[in-house]
View 1 (cartoon, helix red, strand yellow):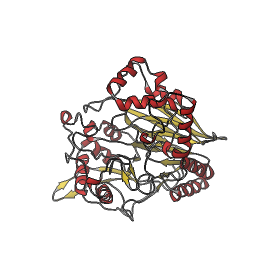
View 2 (cartoon, one colour):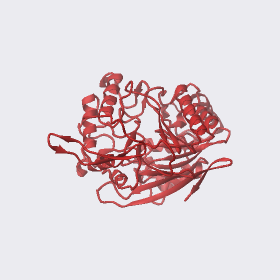
View 3 (tube, helix red, strand yellow):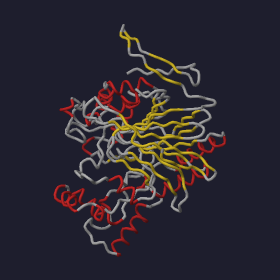
View 4 (cartoon, one colour):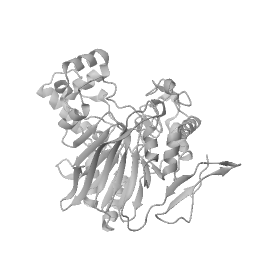
Amino acid sequence: TYKMLAEGLQPDTRYFYRMVHNGVVSPTGRTRTLPSGPVERFNIAVCSCSNYPAGFFNAYREVADTPDLDLVLHLGDYLYEYGMGGYATGDAEKLGRVPVPAHECLTQADYAARHALYKSDPDLQAAHAAAPWFITWDDHEVANDTWATGAENHNDDEGEWSDRRSGALRAFHDWNPTREPEDLIGGMSTIEVGNLATIALTESRHTHRTEQLTFDSFPIPADSEDTPENRALVAQWLRDVVGDPSREMLGADQIAGIGDAFRASRAAGKPWQVLGGQVLLGRITMPNYMEVLPGWLKWYVRNNDDLAWDYIQRSRFDSPFSFDSWDGYPAERERLYETVLDASGGMIALAGDTHNFWTCDLRTGDGRRAGFEFGATSVTSPSPFEGVPAPGVHFGRITEAANAEILHHEPYAKGFMRLTMTPEAFESEFVSVSTIKRRGYTAATESRWRVTRGDDGLELDAV
């Protein structure tokens, strides 16, 4: 790979570029520098979770074809570490998208080869050539469910965790248009969009994150009777274990940095303070699937998927949807919300990770609005709901009905988000592609949302 830092560029200017080496001329790419003054309109494509063997990158092709695109923001899981036979590789041979190397990535050379494979994809190439990119990582750039000192998908017989992580992050920087950090992990960064917005990008995996809880620590068996005593045990566990104030995802310094950036942004008169994270902030409690799912579906799951059946039974006890998201770190989420409210009166949060579209009304524990959140679905990675054959059952509507903070949940679509910022409004369009199993596709708007700032703070409308 070759990387250069262009100097002497003017703000808010479109540039064209290409590479020439030994008589070989690359395709021409387009980029644009950030504005430094007044901005009337700024367009961003937000992507996450692109799994090469799972399907074709049609969402990236649609990004490349987006007119007047100013920036692409990738919120993590740019690639996946698994080898052939692992996660989402069931159609890899049929689609001609077998992972390289064929085994799970463990060394810097492995991760470099995987990045090279992804960069060979013509749709991803087109998206990179269409606009400048800002890329944050989530967990799969190294290994599933990463925390500061390890990962769920790392075992002692796979070598030292620190070596694996260093090799993966070195390959990430070598193969992506990133500035060289002072250290490989780096930290929070900000994007200043003229007088329009401040976007704070977080590092939520390698610096401070406490190891995720799992349902192995759930205080009662999944098939326990729904009694007041058992509910009390779960409530105590949620309060004392999940809600332990020492559990961190970002750390105090990063939260303080977000507050400083948003405070300066509001002082400068910018209407939009945006948090670019990886995992969902929105509070999601599992619906009571035992009550709302039809009997035939419960019978099917009970007889075909033990883990899913445990999950369905456990849903009777108001458990969080996921412990890898902010629901696994609720005390620090409250500290983040208080910091944001003090600094800017509210924010717009962006997230990836879940392979679903989300719109969330973010609330503090005492009910104050901290902002709104838009969650991007995956480019190709499968949704956890795809494996459940449930005609007539829409898990998104079930989630919405059980959770006041969840305004919209689309669990099946693949695609990305288009953001349009103006001084008056912040719009998010959820763009879905009709298929990832062949290159021919159609694109559609799954839903569209508009945020405005009124006298009482941020307000949201579906449009």
